[in-house]
Image 1: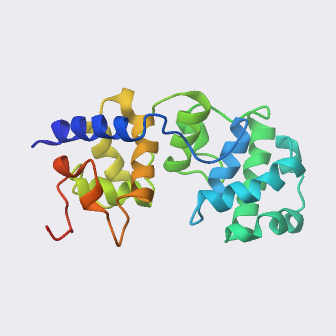
Image 2 (image 1 turned 30 degrees about the horizontal axis):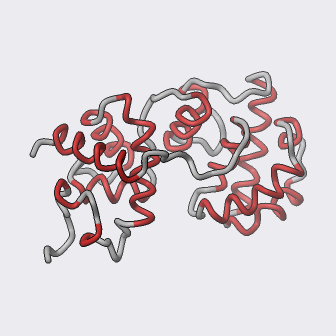
Length: 213
């Protein structure tokens, strides 16, 4: 089975499994999504959502984040891990939004990538969920693992994995697959104990790295 054909079947299966797949980071605007995504690095969405319930009440505008005192912001986000680095990234990104983008999160990839704490993964989340723009595919640890295991890439570098996914998936599916595949990785196709016997995608999966039973 070639990659486009496998991708087509996998997408069809994912649409049946997760028809309403969306970003699980809770937010009400683009800058909240940006800061929540920064916090999500090496942290679960559940933990981030718990932290942002307090964070988004204390800091409401981009200016609030830009003027935040590092120690106070660090205290709020501490349980997300790497809190000093993340606080610095949030404050510097907020200052860039205030000073260079009129207080708004840009909707262009090149501009997003100039912000502290933003690489392609975060930029794709913002573009897809805040602006409905499919500029790429979100490649996190789940997507990287599943894309290789299923047989949609031979690569392990996130940039190369994204390139392969963009080549074999229609653009119209990029945003949906970014969320649905991540959900599947969390719920079924786990790193150490994939539930292959209960997986609806098994027929079309290459099952790389998994002993056939």
